[in-house]
Amino acid sequence: MRLNHKHTDRGAFTLLEVVISAALMALILVSAYLCLDAGMRGKRMIEPRVEVLQNARVAMALLTADLRSACPLSKDYDFLGMHRMVGDLPGDNLDFATHNFTPRAERQSDFCETSVYLDRDPATGRFSLFRRRNPILAPDPLSGGSREEIATGLLGAKFEYYDGVDWYDTWGEIDGKKQQTSNRDQPNLTGMPEAVRITLWFDADPLAKGVAADTHSNAPMVFQSVAQLMLADSSQASASSSSASGSTGDASATGQSPSGMPPGGGN
Image 1 (cartoon, rainbow, N blue to C red):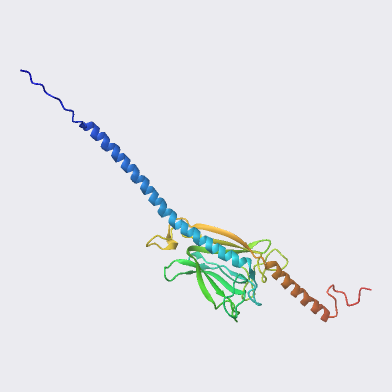
Image 2 (cartoon, rainbow, N blue to C red):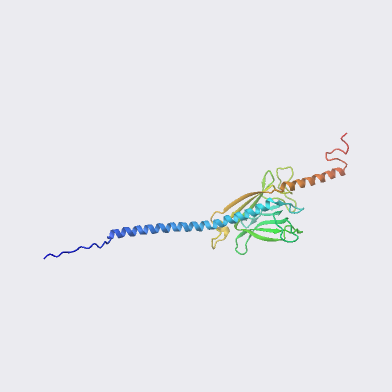
């Protein structure tokens, strides 16, 4: 009597197949993790830079708009630009007037006294760029009004001034004793520059925790723009005409014409 044995195929994996499958699965998971980690690191690096770009764009737009419509600040000084240091950081400041202002209350016009300077924000401890605006004529054009924060996370601000020939680090002096002169016939003690070059340094990672903004090892992001003062020529022409009329008056008082000849001495 013969017994028939039926063989069943269970479809089981061999040990080698299991090891290869596990190795492939681990390789796929590690690759996916590395890709995800690279994406997250890229996002963490880009997000603060996007904020810096937005800060720089807004600050440059505000400053260039004010400077393009800049006009003399007062009869004592038209435009003031001072080079200074805030700790170890360059923190230049500007004082001028601008017509880039929309009046919103009584006693206001489109004339606005403006100051731009770098200062530490007491709330965050970081340096910010502030703008003071005073739309009301004041006895002291360098004070009054209200200030607003136009950019945060700065590592420096520098302003340079163009007189048509050269660039200078400062412009004008309150005491009228500026020693620096241009290559023109007259020193740039008064009047307004033809253009202002703006350079702003921003912290590349303003969201870093526990590290002061001015001690980061990352290289700062630098932004630069040049604003042409559209009213500078008319201001200087007005000053030149006033100076010329004053010279004519002096010559007439001494009995001489502006050309150095006595009146009626042409014949």
